[in-house]
Image (tube, rainbow, N blue to C red):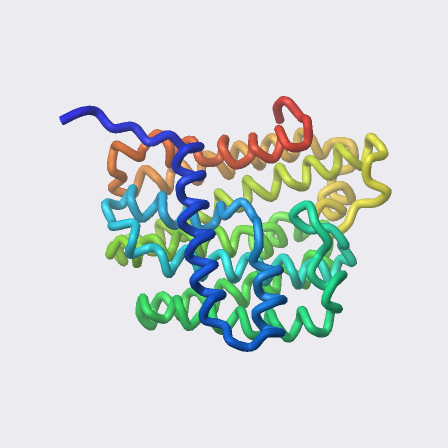
Length: 288
């Protein structure tokens, strides 16, 4: 048998194609025009990293990727809905290189549509059983608390804020993989892996905003990036490097407790670097 090695970039591109098709099929079942138009806009484009995570972890746990289709779709619907709501709260007018949904359709309409998308995603998740649904509801609640802390939280709660607001949906993606791979015995470990992967991701995202702020490319910092800067000031670089290394090490510790298919081991291990270097490269930053 020939050696098989997963190429992470190729895997992501292939996964994105599948997820885009799943979203098209989901939208095709929406018959009300107002719902369809705004839902299509909210769900368009996107890197589809959350759904790709579900695919990758499912296959790494020796599951069938087709069993993860619904999980990946649901995670992308929830992620897109959360971004649409974040844009309203933050008054961001640009999302994914285009106008934010609320800037076109008004904030009231977008809020109503996300109130349709979120339970729709949870209903999809319910096909994996009550436990998967209950965990997903709790993670969505954590995301909501994180959004509150992102605006009103204290700088001293910075790490908790990014765990709740960002890592919760990473946890959702990896957790659902344990169900689609029929490895419910690994639910807790998969939640841990998603947690630390999400923390690492948000640390770099906020690090980039702080650099842009210092360069004058951002007029002001908001949310968790502001908390980070208020917490550490000029020493935020050292803090981020330390916490990023800690998050990656904790992620790798979680992975070691899984029975990962060796064909996917290298890619699972390299995920933090893949995701965070993507952010840095987009921002024109060579390294952390």
